[in-house]
Image (tube, rainbow, N blue to C red; front, side):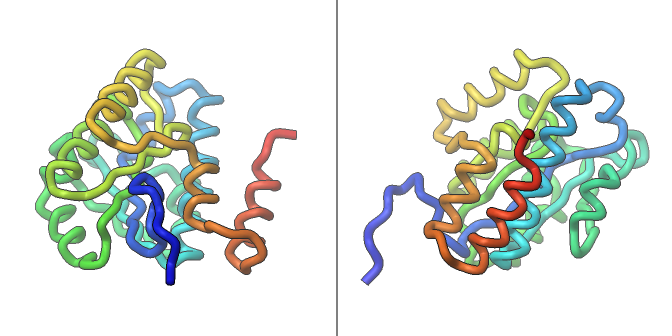
Length: 195
């Protein structure tokens, strides 16, 4: 019999990873060191999702004007199939809602991407209202201004979004050492840790 887990603990296999609007135009307005950290962490989340066979949903906000998803993320995905949107909340897009509906066993969403206080915040709140548990990897999100990033996280925290870090999420979903998935992710974490 499986041990009971705290409601904050993610149940393996019940999550989908959502990557919101990590697009070319945002590179120009983000601080380089912040953006590279966010990209590194999103790539770790992609690797984890693919290793655990979790669905990945990618959105792009008005790509005609803001550009496509950055190359580093496109190249990390097995399949590049972005959902184009105009609404800030992904839930406001019919394509996104249809994709979620297909994922019948998904009860929790891991959010990453740009910008924390706009599209991520609005998506998180609407996902909560739709009955999903929502996790935000704070170090896999960013805004142009630090204050906006902080306030976005603070509002989500008050609304019962679970704010965490990429590494904490990875180890929660792995849940134990010694597995093939653990060894795979441990190698990636060592490669990406600051020297």
